[in-house]
Image 1 (cartoon, one colour):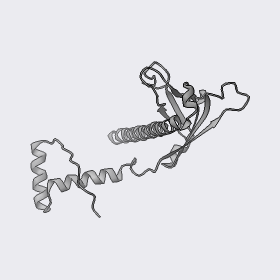
Image 2 (cartoon, rainbow, N blue to C red):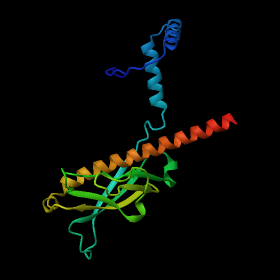
Image 3 (cartoon, rainbow, N blue to C red):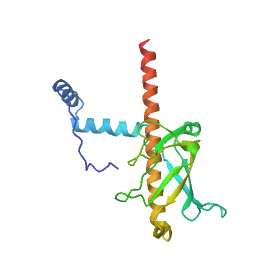
Length: 194
């Protein structure tokens, strides 16, 4: 079954390339639109980031009874599941989500010290450090809830935190893979040119 064609992408090419494309299409009894569509579909299907089946499992738990901050601070753990096996031994950086409500932060997420990572643009809106890293696919941190009313309704902030953490971690994995592919392509190019 063919996919529904409900979107349009416009590309700019030189007039020489356009003429050659049209000539080749005539020879193969095809249309330029069909050829470009095939190229795009093949690119998407064969790209390493397609169909990785990444999932992020998150677990929220209470601090020990002895901790005086347990009434507003909660443990948060994340684990990356799926994807490529080479992610098993890598440190993958990502940005922690920020949860500002106008000028205030009703709750926030922070990393434990060994899951913090400094890299370009890892400072948040209000100057807070938001650089983080997965180590062997895992991350640990905490949730800080600053509004007492929210503590009575944990679903209001837990759902938001889980969704945003998943987005940020998967975005970090995509960036890591794209950088790895680019690095490998550069190394291959330099080897070929020598």
